[in-house]
Amino acid sequence: MVLGAGKKDAVEEARRCLQCANPVCVPACPLGIDIPGFIRAIRENETDKALSLIRQKNVFASICGRICPAPCEKACVLEEEGVTIGIRALERFVADTGREKAAASVAPTGKKVAVVGSGPAGMAAAAELAGQGFSVTVFESGPFAGGALAAYIPEFRLPRKTLTKEWDILKKLGVEVKTSVGLGTSMTFESLQAEGFNAVLLAVGAGSVKIASLPGVNLGGVFFAAEFLQRINFLQTTRSLGKEPLPFGKKLVIIGSGADALDCGRVAVRLGASATVIFEHTEDEIPVRAAEVQQAREEGVAVEPLARVTELLGDARGFVRAVRCFRMDFADPASTGQWKLLPVAGSEFEVPADTALVSSVGGSHAWLGRILPKLHVASDGTIRTNELTGMTSVAGVFAVEPAKAGEPSATRAFAAGRRAAQNVVRFFQT
Image (cartoon, rainbow, N blue to C red; front, side):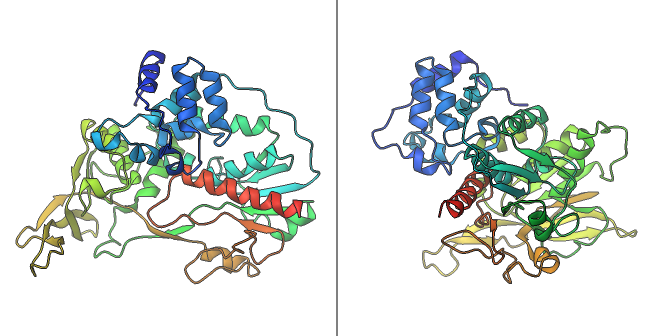
């Protein structure tokens, strides 16, 4: 587990910040945090003030300080020199050591809002609405609050006690949480209305996913990467890890280049297995911080960039036994100056595996359209909303905007949830 910075290191890091007159880090942050302001407070030994500045835009600093991909750091003017400010680490330091300022009392609006989904978007929406005086109840279909944060982020990256700490913030704001309640099964829009809710906000995450189209993907021993992480997290949450057998082998190959792929590798190594992460791009192109790739390697995860998986090979029992790949490299076969990644002739190789984990492809809420016919769900599986109001085809029902391709992150989900909540607030103000 990566430990947080101490006070001395944090102050020294904060002093490196140039305090730019036109800080490019702020617009790069999905939440628009006053980054120069909170860093200036750190170097002036005003940690509580730094926390207050962060919480103006981000209630869940402990989470973002651990798992945010930190686009602000990539935008930092010092990035080109390779000495960018460790903004994420500074946010974590502030969240872990700053003292909470008592929340100002807000006059209740008398309106009740149901937030469906307890992931990062739902958490941010609930915080925003409660802070504006609404009575908020969050409904979660799973057994634990936290959505993707609880299901897919490993303990070593986001400890459950940290997630619990952030949920306590919501409870202090008066937010109620109900788990094991599914939309379309345990409740409907009509039942929520009958219970007195004046609006519903759908924060249902990325939706159901599909597995990549790949020969051999239906063999035994092939799983979603997300499924693997969820099984491990839920076993840990119920304190039964090590007491119940896991249907995973000792030689794991993970196909994909996102944070989930690296997390799977690091979890597998911790469980005593070998792990190889394979993807066809260069490391510079993957949506993961370079430090996290390095940490995975240091922990024993083999990382194979520039390798395309062509097939999963099975044994006589119908279980995966190996992954077939070939090397990729940049080439300009037509001499046009248009270099692109192409397979290298004669470079085919196999990686032995008794378990293959495949990163999911896309997300869809088509299932919602089937069980809730009044809800307009487009052919691509996204929930359709009014561009100006954020309302769906059902009166009084709003939805969080979907994440753009290649941009999923807890920080962006927090920002999207906050914007959706502001749509609800405006609806009642007009």
